[in-house]
Length: 304
Image (cartoon, rainbow, N blue to C red; front, side):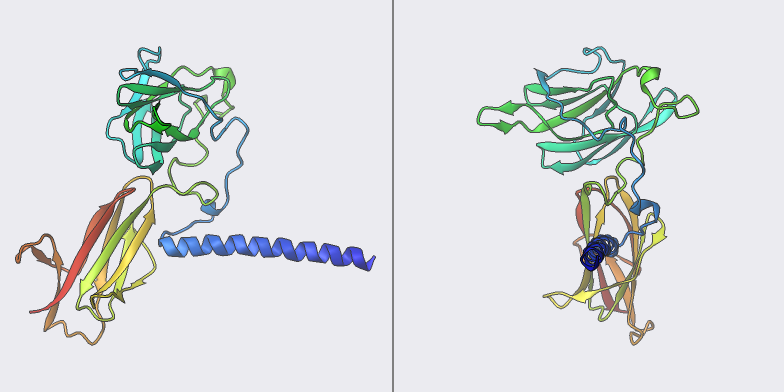
C-alpha cells in the first residue's frame, strides 16, 4: 500500500514539475518579447476535428500562368509581393484574412486563413505548384509550401502566391448559429504559444552618450515594461527590441535619461540620416516593425 502511495506521489511531483516548467517557459517568452500576454493567449481554444491544421497535400505541377479562374474558382487573392504578412479581402460580404508566415527565404512558407481555401497556387520561374484541398475536410492552415522542384532536388524561388476560394457546401460547415462561414479558431497570425512562432522583427535602439538611460516602449498603443539600455562595445547605450509578429506593428519608444543629466545643458536628438543636419530634437521615435524586418533607431545626447 505504501509503495502505491509513493508511486502516486512521485507521479504527482513529476506532473507538477512539467506544469511549472511550461509556465516558466511561457512567462519567460512573454518577458523576452516585451508583449503583453493575456490569459486567453495562454489557453488554446478547443479545436473541433473540422478545424484541421493542414493535412499533407501533394501539389500538382502546373504552368507559370496558372490562376484561380482557369482552375474554376471565382474568388482569388493574389499576393504579388512575396513576404510575411496578412492580406485582407472581402468574401461573401465579410472581411476575411490570409496570412503568410514562417518564411524560409524565398523557398518555403506556412499559411493560415480565416476561411478554408479551395486551392493555393505557388508560382515560380517557368512553372507553379498547385495545392488543391479536399472540400469535405476544411483546411484552415498548411505548412512547408514551396514552388516546384528543379533538377538536383532544389526548389525554384517563389515569385507569387495566389489563393483560391470556392463555394463551400453548407452541410459541411459547423453550426455557427448565425448562418455564416466559421472563422479560424483565433485571429490568424497572432502569436500563439502552443503553435509555431511566426516571423520576428528586430529593432536596435541606440543612444550615444546617454549613460544609464532607460527605454519606454509602446507596441500597438500598449505600454510594455521599461527596458534598460546596456553599454555596447563602442561605449554607447542601446537595447535590442525583438517582436514576434506576422503583420506590421506600430511601435513608439521614448528615452528616459538619468536624473543627474541637466536638461538645461543637454538634449536628445534623433538621427534621420547620415548628414550633419539630418536630425530632430526629440526624445522619442515612432516606427513600424514588420515581420522579418531589421532596423536601427539612433539617438544621441548633445549639449545645447
